[in-house]
Amino acid sequence: MAGGQGMARSESGSRDGTGLSHLAAIEERIAALAGTLAPQAAPPPRARRFPTWEVARYMLPVSAAHLRRVLAADPGLPQGEAHGPGATRWFSLEEVERLRERFAARNTGHRPEPARIIALAQAAGDTGKTVIAAHLAMAARLDGWRVLMIDLDPAAALSRRFGIAPVAAHDGALGLLARHHGEMQQARNRERVSRGEAMLPLGPEQSRALRQPPEAALRQTAWPGLRIIPAGLGLARADLLIPAWRQTMPDWRPWQALPAMLRAAGLLDGHDLVIIDTGPGLGWLALAGLAAADLLLVPVRPSAEGCAETAAFLALLQEGLGGVEAAEAAIAQALGLPDFAFRWQGLHFVISRFSGQAEAAAIEAALGGLVLPGRLATTPMIGPAGPGLYAADYRDFGRETYIRAREPFDALWAGLRAILTGGVQASARR
Image (cartoon, rainbow, N blue to C red; front, side, top):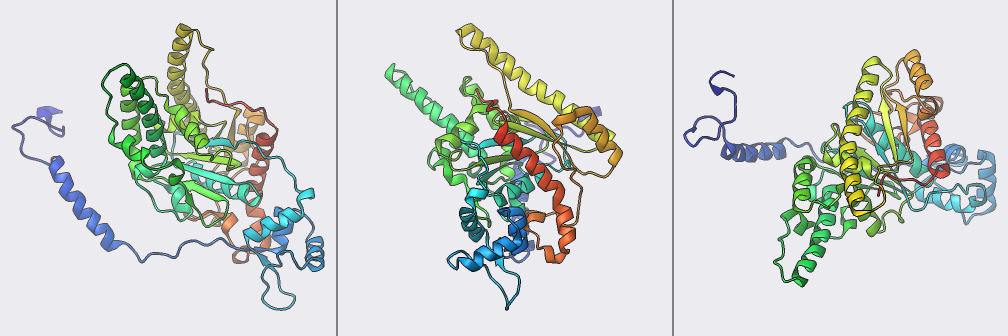
């Protein structure tokens, strides 16, 4: 660019233009404006109640008539709420859990121990990752599974859907990675002291993370048994910080940090399923989340563009993790250690933003069993915010409309559940 126009300049003689000192002042003004323009706080989301027919059909499952007979015969069981004689009874999720205990002999589905980790994987934006993550979390929870969601998207779309405000970077997943790095550095410092060497100072992120337990990152949603480690814009710093942390300690492995911290805090034993929602792009934070997973789910839009972006993403994933794998394998060979390789229980595709039968059928024919059941279409019942259709009141749409809308998501969860409970227990973590 002629004359260097449009370029950031650092020469001491360059006084014109906007510098970092200007940004701080502008930041204060915009922050104050945000507070002024903020709408009146909406009431926190509430978990809805479930009518008898929905409890019987989807959550136990038994016939509605049988459920009514059991409730009539045992007044000690939750009876739900009814507004008037003969009116439909509505049950809270806690009451449904108690009913599950009563029908346990009929509903003894196996759940993996410890929790399996699945990650939504796609570098392109607007592919439905967050919608899929939210609906799988809700479907699993309504099926009786204890679910932990981890939001790795700085936009915090998943967190917002469940009414959780964005958090500072150190209060989310990046804090867990910082704590893992800090604990490892503390161990190295103890070794250095034993040899009479000077300790290496902890960074500010590590010092802060070490002052709070890993479980402090959790937030409870309105749904009992459904928790989240929320995100915030500060997560955008992760792709700058993680390489710097690796420079200070080259043998620190960020892809091991997240599952290690979840395991150390008892969060894998305390849940049945962990769902990671990654942001667009494929930086260090996303790679750490994908490498931590047992199973990868890749949303693909049924179109030429959707297939092209998915192929490009898979190439990027091979390049990103392939470089790490090659370096780790070389180290293992030099030290006489077992071979290193990333392994997942599986990689599966989810047809998202479904609109064309022919395109979806072509993808299913090409990929076969790698495509999970359920073609996920965009529907007003999902909406741009909120947990989605599982949290919707069917009376707003009609029972049959509600049933048809949830069918592809029910099929997707059923397919994923079959893999989680019947597949081999392999993992990318080494």
